[in-house]
Amino acid sequence: KGESFKQAESLAQKSLALDNTNALTVGEMGHIYLLKKQHEKAIAECERSISLAPNVAMNYQVLGATLRFSGRAAEGIPLLEKAIRLEPYPPASFYYQLGMAYNLTGQYDEAIAALKKALKRTPDHLLSLIGLTVAYSLADRMEEARTTADELLKVNPKFSVAHLEKKAPYKHKADLEHSMGALRK
Image (tube, rainbow, N blue to C red; front, side):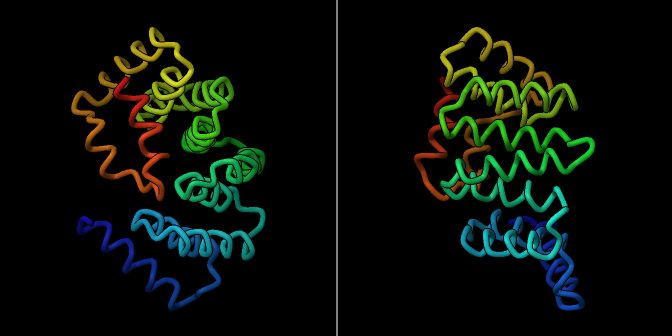
């Protein structure tokens, strides 16, 4: 991991040493565990963040995303929907996570709708463009997939499936291949 990642982890740990009941920091520690591919620790911290602050949308979003990467996307969907309901103006990332969870559960029309909402919020949101490309590909809507992939490459001309594949913290190789295979297609 990079130096900034190590610094973020160190700062989160210092913050928790001062106050281990700060729900946002607990949730951030869950996110750090996810990026380290320590899925069970990530889930435990995210669940704890919700028990500390049950009305904080970000905590539900992080747990929903963590469940998605942990092979439990169907369990993450209601949490991601709740995050969107709790947040007065949900950011693109909330809809992106929901769309990707729908992709993993075979609900491609729902994925496309969620990812379009993400892009309505933030038109150049790279992850949402990736997710929408995946959704169109999985739905066998190849012309729309190619058009979205072209938009993705305008936002990031150096985008690489191989690079994304290395960074994505999926627990199960089949889930990773589900998305990466759709992008390659």
